[in-house]
Amino acid sequence: MNILSLLIFIPLLFGLIIVVLPSSLRAGFKYITLLATLVQLGISIFLYLHFQTGPDHAGVNIESQFQFVQKLPWINLDLGTFGKMQIDYFVGIDGISITMVLMTSIVMVIAALASWEIKSNLKGFFALFLLLNTAVIGVFCALDFFLFYIFYELMLLPLYFLIGMWGGHRREYAAIKFFLYTLFGSVFMLLVMVGLYLSVKDPNTGNHTFNIIQMMNPANYDQGSIFTLFAHKTILGMPARTVGFVVLFIAFAIKVPVVPLHTWLPDAHVEAPTPVSIILAGILLKVGGYGIMRICLGIFPDIASSGAYWLGLLGVISIIYGALNALAQRDLKRLIAYSSVSHMGFVLLGIASQTTEGISGAVMQMVSHGFLSTMLFFLVGVIYNRVHDRDIYNFRGLGSLMPKYTTFTMIAFFASLGLPGLSAFIGEAFSLTGAFKSPSVNGYLPYWMAICGSVGILLSAGYFLWTLQRMFFGTLSLKGGDIWKTALTDLYARETIALLILTILTLALGIMPSLVFGKINDSVVGLIHFLSRG
Image (tube, rainbow, N blue to C red; front, side, top):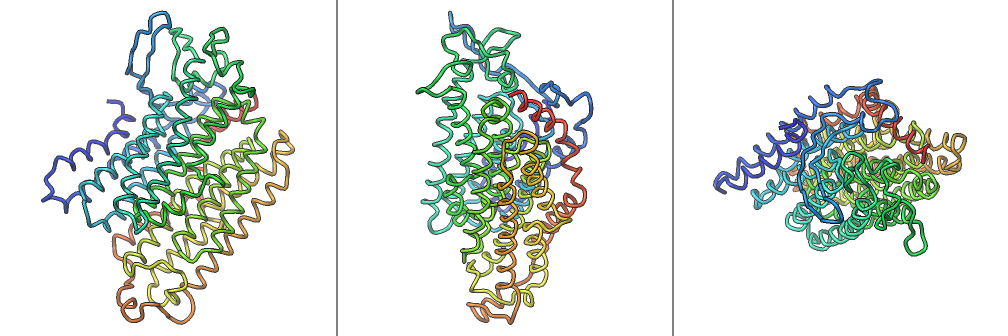
């Protein structure tokens, strides 16, 4: 088996083991899950270390950028006069994919450690957890659109049940809202996928194809076919390529989430258990950003270029709106959820700049936010598991009661507000650099967008520092009095290990951003060339 396939399906194998084991062994399910994520992390590190960069994997040839490729016939249908339908199991990773895969593997280990808090129906929880793990890794590795769509949809079912069965008091509402939002985008994505299939032919076989790499090449569009939508036709008076781009963008923007498609996120975060909140913020949001880069920009570079202003505008709105809403929150978890909306706005702004700096910054921001949001939601889970309360105004002076917890919280807050030397500073700085450079290079974004993005950093400093001052400084005062004082013990060894790992990663990326930039450079340069051609 190809090592990439092993990476994708290892969690599924461990999940099946949990399913067949008797419930009397439920105490061991969390250890099996942790082992699965550690094995997956080991494979991801191997792939990262052996991922090659340089002249052989750079340039305009998109196909040469993908490594560890496996392509096997999967579904074959003879359609008579319409030719043959062949869907391949086609996986591979480029520089952007490998960074997302490694980030995902690390976040899943932390989420597995956070799952110690789950006490009910352990078999169902950990089986769904590992199924979700397989789906997410599959999305980042799939190079066939049909396979990509299957993994993309497969994420939806486990998350629906993980929120709806193990969440808070309004878990059913949050789960259904999340399900409907995501399904709305996915249904129309399916229509565009079919349209692309009918528009593109594999030059080697002459058959229509779901191959994403072939879809990126304008020469593969069948100009003469009556079924071709995305070569020259219109839909309701609009160019079909514009409609296709907009539909796919909406599907991925829901995941990011981009304002105004974000309203599912705060509810889902507040009601989800800690490990699921970690996966939602640390990984799922990155699936949206990755989809915009891989699918929207890769297949429709011409529309991405002409619509860059609107992408940048949505990014700026998300930055400011998310930050202002975070300032207004009393619930600590809801505050961090809105901060995610704001920070992911930098991803969209960097992508919209269509500069090497901007897109590199967008990828770095996704990786950085993956680790920092994981750290923040893990910290919220620590407090909530002890006293079942997250109201910022019900805590004061925690620094004297929980010094280790306070130290890690300060690191997470300062890193998230963009303190130099930490990971978020690199991502935000490069995204803004790309936005400032864009007007002089290609004229896509006006300067005021970069300035507004900078204001978002100031607002993030406001809500993080204000929260730090209210909860951790001053005289100890707790709503629950002595009962809370007894319950609020400092970090356990498991919690300390998880937070220490995330702290080291945040420092490492802030000091050595080449850990990400060195891997993604070839892919980003190729994407920029693609966009300039569009």
